[in-house]
Length: 233
Image 1 (cartoon, helix red, strand yellow):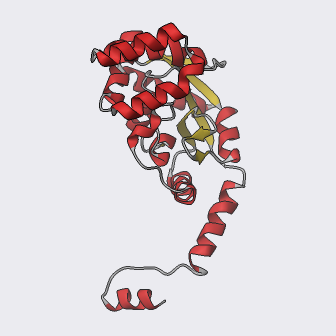
Image 2 (tube, helix red, strand yellow):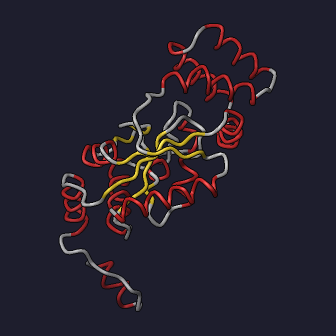
Image 3 (spheres, one colour):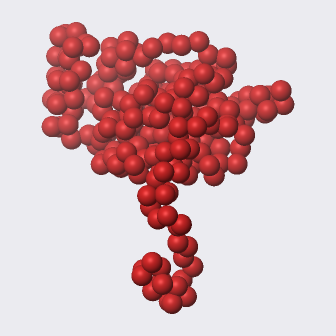
């Protein structure tokens, strides 16, 4: 109240929440435990297919969970930096879900956990049970996008993560990846990780539509057409 009065006296536009932050948090928790009154259009597909880029292109009706969690959703996804607290993630997510005006929200088919962040059950169930688009593109395009995202990874982070994923790749593949690191061949590393690791652990699911994302602008137009088709029904 004291801070509110000081800021008001300085002629600043401020509002005071009735019940304070505790009441706000209770409202957030209630919202995330209630059925979400929106339909979702969920993007699925292998690593590097441009799902995040497509959501960014549709920021007016897209929910970028990876951006909110500051994590790329992969074994190496932590390189984006420090994650927000669970409470801050929930606050930001609630704000996004409330303020997007579209009746349909575009979202990526993220796993239940993004680093230290757990996706709320209500939201996770909603986009898992929604209409889905399979995003595909050729391997070379996926390699380029992966390199762009992870090109600045530090050696210690890379080596430590390789140790963590060792149970899921062959010894030969691990040796080849580490050798490529020593040789500075990040393109070879990206290809090996995509083909020998990510594609093998990715769970294929049935989708309602399929869009090739080699050209993101064309893919974006197809997604808009799919959205319009769903809304018209």
